[in-house]
Length: 253
Image (cartoon, rainbow, N blue to C red; front, side, top):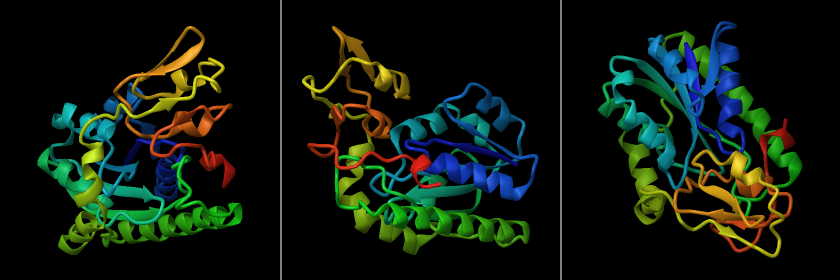
């Protein structure tokens, strides 16, 4: 088995690595941003994929990755892990349907509630200890899910008609359009920005550049929130107007 993931602040990376470790000592997890990932998937018959749900759907960067390499998924068995701040409905199913359209055999899914990564909105913010407890609960769910997978009865969270309806009416019908294209909404507060270049290095889309010692954003933001959560001056925002709390999985494990 091979694990692959796309991760913004580390939740999905953590989930993929834990799942692989629990499955067997031979399994490894790879970021879709690494060149060696394609080779690992090519050689595997079965893989798990973890990703952060956005508005009950799949981030644009991951959708593009799947469709750009659609020949790789033909005939492969796949188990999907969807990480989320609160609720996604059919997070596993959303990616599962895309993979099925590329010829993959989706055998199951797992939904994990994790610390919220939307740094500039306070709606889902929780105390530190609560977030640590969420991570522990996610670890336990992963262990139970791996046991079921090995027993031939994989968890089916997010898979099926009822989950799909929940995802559609819960968020996707109203906000799903936000992920159909890359966003141009990333904002830089020039008064706060010190031009350190960290955001430029972190961005998976090469959407940020440093010009005249200030960060400048373009129109290819995939809303992963890496830059916003890591900016030392809290100079970046996307959905909200100010940074409420900067988050990263390293705070909770």
